[in-house]
Length: 437
Ligand SMILES: Cc1cc2nc3c(=O)[nH]c(=O)nc-3n(C[C@H](O)[C@H](O)[C@H](O)COP(=O)(O)OP(=O)(O)OC[C@H]3O[C@@H](n4cnc5c(N)ncnc54)[C@H](O)[C@@H]3O)c2cc1C
Image (tube, rainbow, N blue to C red; front, top):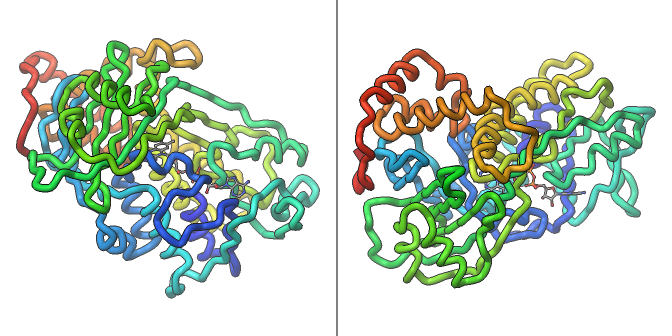
């Protein structure tokens, strides 16, 4: 996704854009090995949705025609937060679809007939990049194994978590970037089910969150194209979502509410259960390097990957595409470093949300938790509890999760006042809300 969106942006700045992909691209919206996470629940939060539609107008129509479902958040979602059930206020909207459908639709838009704002791009699929072509300590293209070299004015590394950019940069004489890892030891297991005919419980999606450190299991059940649900179960602290049938259902039963288990118990499974465990928050601080080559940038998961449970990766990649566009418009030399700094800044909020939450688990592998993080988490607990019953605080919190506002917005006076009032009132926990408020 980071590569596709970066390629779209580059068409406005370069005569020719080539997308190199190691997989052969399928012609249908189906799984491919290069995106092994694609069978799991993928939510494109509002900020990402808006950027992707702005870059590729008409994409949402394609997704809707293919069966993507509109879900109001949280109005259409039964959402059990760490502080109890959330009232079903109407804050924002998601389109829900499978990741292969999104990738296919974006790819088709990108390679379809060009419009005034966009030149066509060349697709070089089935080709693996194995290194960078040096020009002194700068970058002049990529090496395609034994097949030769592809020369370019700018190379964008969007090869995901497995990026070998640190090693490639070292060969050019640049230092390795400092890295930060916060690993909640979390594993997903996912399966699709047919939505039973006539099923009308008054919600479209379920989100049952963990309550760390007491409980570590999360479950999501969201509609997708083709009249099916995707059910993703995840557990932190090595309580991994299991890929075996009975254990999968038992895991679902062990969530903090039985509502998800009850929905899938008798539903028809459409796919095998698949598991995925490469979920650590992992940041490579390219923005802090003392030297940086001309003609090269790193974006998406290759620079900053998140625990996926918070649904941020694709939206952060979309924001990075806009940052790249901005840096290229400002044609001064050194745009590459400005991009790395800008992308790091715009990922900082999502990083804070994901790692702040993950540090609540006792098993999380990270540097010792600082007092400041504990204090912020204590305040966030109060925000979550207030957001469950207060429409304004709910809106502010969802806007942060949807990357529409910075986490600092939760410290605005209006939020602080409502959080304080809620703390004094301490309303009784609300029962499972069956209808949108
Ligand atoms: C289980 C799970 C659930 C997730 N859920 C969400 C969610 O709900 N919402 C969300 O926004 N994000 C989610 N994410 C994160 C999201 O998948 C990524 O952030 C997003 O795909 C952006 O990653 P990327 O494009 O940088 O890398 P990737 O998606 O990993 O893509 C990298 C691409 O580079 C290709 N490639 C790799 N090496 C080479 C090479 N040497 N030569 C040529 N091609 C190469 C790969 O084949 C692949 O196509 C989830 C992730 C996981 C693991």
